[in-house]
Length: 601
Image (cartoon, rainbow, N blue to C red):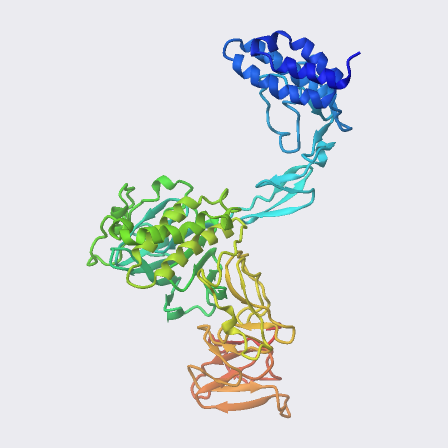
């Protein structure tokens, strides 16, 4: 009987023959491999496969048979790890080529040839870790990440829960978003992208679009000015008309240009990171980064009812270029020019590629903007296409040639980061050398109040002096910027003084802030009803000739009420004192001042 070494030499000699001889002696070779063991078989397999490749063109059936015999001989020499079993193509038409795993359960398999191998027994599937589990124990998958049953993820405004390998998601209709950023980049509510560089005031969006209808409840206007000398323009101020209120956003500030007659202000202003947020009670939100980016969100109640540079919001981006005359046009400049407010403004011209006009900045712009395509944003790439944002970044970085280079670049990257945040992918892309935000500026010099930090994903609704209960009508996610972590003894964030406080001041009807103890101007002469010190009738009266005073560390709703002749008028607190001065007739509507001094307010 031959020894194992002799058998190995015989097998190697058989493998070194010509390809045709090797094919002819296939059966004897396989038997030799079985006797000499797995090690020799693996050596022979590589030799045979080289020979098979040489004869594949001349004799494909022979090559396929040889592959199958060698593969099956190798599988027979290896044991499947329980509970896996061996699927043999010699006894069945189905092998391991269509074996089900947790990731392929819902996929149909098209088999071109049988492949023998280890598979899970019926009723079980592979868990991708070498084991077998029941189907209902498989995890859910989202972007290649696995989630076990009961886990939740957020997809825009909807929550999805993993249940027996299936996602069960809420069906809320998410607000639509219009984005204007950088040098004339627009993305409409329905997702149409275009570049428009006009130097004038333009209507971004409004409702009640009929030419004969003047009952618009909101209108948003942008003032576009040149950015650089390449013909690009960007938004530098925003006008917001809400019913009969007019707000102007310019130079990092919100100014009230005109207040309405309604005693209840139809909007709320919040500071969230780098953004100033205006939210209304009727489903309109505006986010302004205090530079050149504006996000406008509207709820579904405005669907099909709005118009302007942000489009029609009817689910059809093909008619987003609807002009002021209600005609659908194909040309970007014709569409944009139709929405300018002043006919004396020059019409916008066709956009010129700034990188071709500034070739010396082209390479630098591509290098800077490559961060959008880099690994740092890789988790977002499958959900938000980076190519269009990258192109916009390069164009803007080339165009900003009169200063503000970094602002143009940073605005473009921040726009992509915010688009990723819409899908719950917050990316910490800023660094000390790339568009830094110096949040430490707001911390105290002695380090005792180190409460400010940069948050790329924003923060939940906070308790602020303008919102002492910390209740927000709309859930807003992913607004990056500097946020404070207020301590328990100073639970309220004062957005005007940018610090955490224990007691807030007062706000008048125009939302103007007054520190505690300051004089709040009123339209008429007033009395102020304060609690301390008590009078015999349980109240205390302070007469001020021309103003009302914030009444101290208690929640009060001060009402400055115009009196009837003869004067004086009076101001009362809420809750009221024991008894205000008797009046023969009910007082007219009051000009109210809201003093926010505790969560009870």
